[in-house]
Image (cartoon, rainbow, N blue to C red; front, side):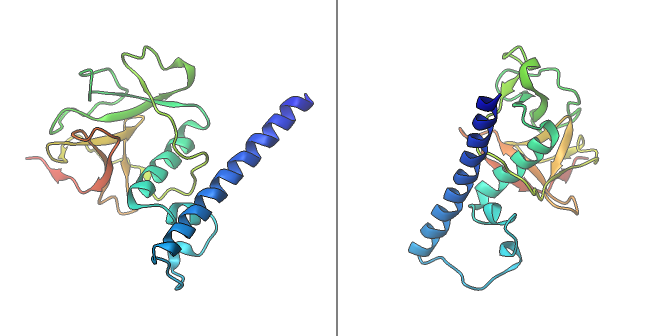
Length: 190
């Protein structure tokens, strides 16, 4: 029992040190590059906002997505069933009308996400992302178009909104060889 407690304490300490190291490295790099700004602004006023504010724009998108995934699935490893590589699968709530018919739907977590031909496990980049500015929307995204290559990012069949007004939504670019994210406004299909 003491070994488990010590192991958990060490793991928590390691997470804290990683976050501190990330912030310290980013701040030092910005200062060395001449990018530091001594004028405080709203995005740098709280300690909780600091890790997200210290990231690149792409890093902030990933941080916010991972924070929503953590809030939805807890510490379980999420998985997506999507139509990107293997053709249509059976997600919980697929788009009925979409420009490409493709999407990313994180709709499973933990050891029950099988077979791997259907579910693609997602491995977190950040150890403990929190305070996302994203949320899951109840809007009917099925008749929207995001363009030729963008694929909507869904969690349990609900589209991820990037802002409180729900004017932009999270997409993944299908033509990129990486998990490239963006927030874009949809266009209503006629």
